[in-house]
Length: 112
Image (cartoon, rainbow, N blue to C red; front, side, top):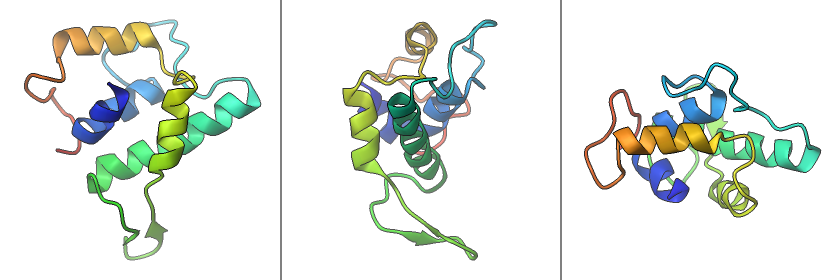
């Protein structure tokens, strides 16, 4: 489900990961986890989601006029495999209840 969301709605996934979504709860635990390995995985996944939100589902590096930007799909998949630390599942479920992946794209979503 998170792989599909990253492909279809990376902007919304980014907002959920950063605690900036309208679905973010007042006492949310979204954001970088405390444990070092989990935190590193979250950061790498967030880099990938930000890239996908800005450039779409692109595999090659992109020059933005100043810097080379790259996707990190393997790191994103690793983050998903270890349980998506730093993503509040209650917030994700609330988002998906309102905007199912099989339906229309949610409002303000980046990407495709």
